[in-house]
Length: 457
Image (cartoon, rainbow, N blue to C red; front, side):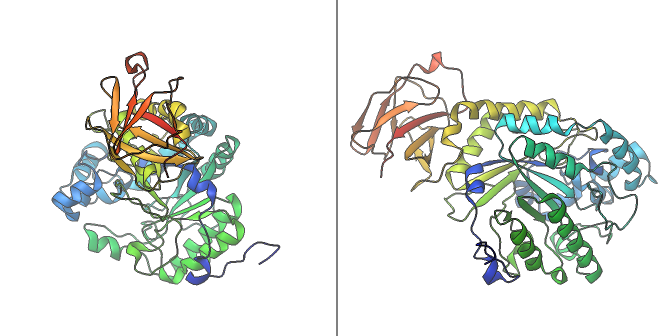
């Protein structure tokens, strides 16, 4: 202990004493930003969502037809793949990835970080995570440690966005590709085996990555370390995590310093990608996904392949009911502009939260997460400040709704968020029957929330 503050040592035993701070449990919604050189070509095929494609077609197919636009450098090298063909047809066979850098550095002069921060705050996000360095190795901050002079953004994107985000009262997190850096070791990933082998173990790179993480921590004091695709063993991730906790005691660290959990490293939260859980996980987790099939901006995205506002709200509520946060990604174009379809979905989620946010922010999971009405509408349960919130994931029909296997306290008051009056209710055995307000008179919503106070024990 130093001055009443715990001092962490670079051991799993010491780091495991770190508890997830309340702010991260309360936050529920973060915005992920993938922005970099890959935002210039901004192209990938619309192959499908990660886990579905891998389950149906396998890893080799996934990488050859990779829908992640931020993997452009890798995809453009895979002969016969869509990105390979697109790159040659559009830019020519001899056009290198690094030739996109001047275009990016010119484009970012137009970027306004405060516009981003104000938008994210308006949506209701409580934290933001920015890619400081993706797998291509390009740096979005003026580092003192560089491996090539041209591989650095012309603006301090990390610093400017951090300042804008904090001005809006949100926490700032930093993503860093710790395991893969094609500017340091030029590998081509074609399947899962080459993916794991692409994690750099060279001691010189370990020093390079450590210098970056320490610099990012010292300079920007992030609230979240969001590492990706493992870390060189020689880098000793425990030392970075201990250094971070001792500088930022209320910070949190994700699970991706340890690719596949092979090393048994400490983490504060896990990070399933394009995935949800079937059950409540008492250990904190964060689901991350794009609004389409990609994290980086993909000019091919359209309404047909992007998640709808209804689906987004339902997914978000399901995640929160099971002790998760949602880290929702947006991919700006090279100029820093966020496309209209992405903004529409962000504002749609924000509009729902403006009515139903009291069921979400600061909430905790209940004894169970899922329920059902007799009309076949799925229900998700969330608790907050002694109340139980039953979120109906579809529009109820009729004057009453029956929630199966839910018993309210005899003195309970039931209301619907967005409607003013108390609702009549009665217990029918193990089922709760609630007389609804006139739903047709309310603005149509992706989901409707019943507030039961006090909550059933």
